[in-house]
Image (cartoon, rainbow, N blue to C red):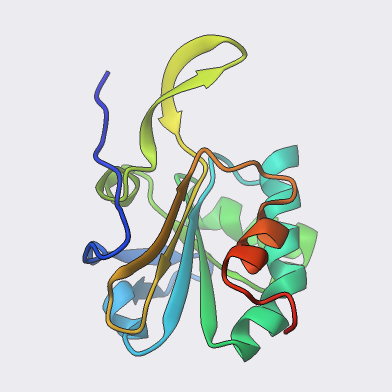
Amino acid sequence: MSETARLTPGDTAPEFTLTDDTGAEIGLSDLLGRKVIVYFYPSAMTPGCTKQACDFTDSLDALQAAGYEVLGISPDKPEKLAKFREKESLTIRLLSDPDRSVMKQYGAFGEKKLYGKVVEGVIRSTIVVDEDGKVFLAQYNVKATGHVAKLRRDLALNDA
């Protein structure tokens, strides 16, 4: 099993272009000049990932008002992401990374503990990229529940 390098504040965020749940392609460079919250999650339609996606959706207006875009990335195919969006009324953009190449570039794929066993998989992570494409904040092994509230505190957005 391989350990992927984790990003740290000040690093240049790796460029990517992925397909979203509508079939459109979006690249990180398309959002240059805006702050972007890129979060990686293991699988659409699972309890923890649903909770996290709903929390981001519930906070989206406040995040966008503070200048942030939100991109959720999982290995799911765009068709499954579209069902996830529809079922949960999600308003965030969901991107498909089926070969996990972007996750590996961002350090969001590798060894993790699951029910006491070491497995290789998606590491629930959130990377905040600034307007210049640099990593502002990198959080790994985040909890699905309560993460968005913590992130808002970390970004000093609780007044928003």
